[in-house]
Length: 294
Image (cartoon, rainbow, N blue to C red; front, side, top):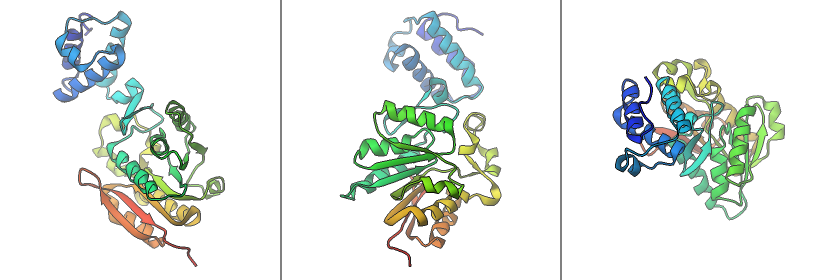
């Protein structure tokens, strides 16, 4: 079925009819609004007030392709090539995860922590993806020295583009963090932050198709028999590279909160705290290195 005309009202009805089997009615309205805004600069009020308004033929094609992509479950952020994080826009594509609200909370905690230090603070983000975490830290705390590491060259390219667009200086480093030999090229820091892969392979059956089929699996999944691999390595890295008094902030699998805390406790960290996100789910762990180990 084709969009009958290039009128806004007909395009909106096309979205409703074609996507009704895959999305809730309210979600369809939001998806259409995103497309109207991005493709034609048409705001929500104008969709309602001016359904007779028309778009160009080239724009009409974009709506048609968008609906086709949405029907096969491609996330709207990848269709538009951008996502929203802490009130800012970031370029995204299939080489990076789409930023989540709980990651905003993780980032804000780091920003708040830096405010408590009068001295210049150094921060490293492990598994940076789109670069949204280190870029927002640098934007909000310009005096901080901010580093970010990722194994994916494609992800780093996207992150660098985002840093340029936001006009901030983040030191991006290409490295396989799980390979300890690469730690030589990474700095000693006061804060380590990470939203590492933490979804167990067995949990994939409960995930939405649009996540499974489109977002990068290397940034999502860990093996069932070593689900805490990244936290173990982050804890070891922190023992080597985290300055005395430094802190670690990590996003976690809510089903493995206690186990993640134990990883850091066993590694000798103090004040290991499991925190809930705004929706009440245990999604964050922070840990402190209070003094030199002898």
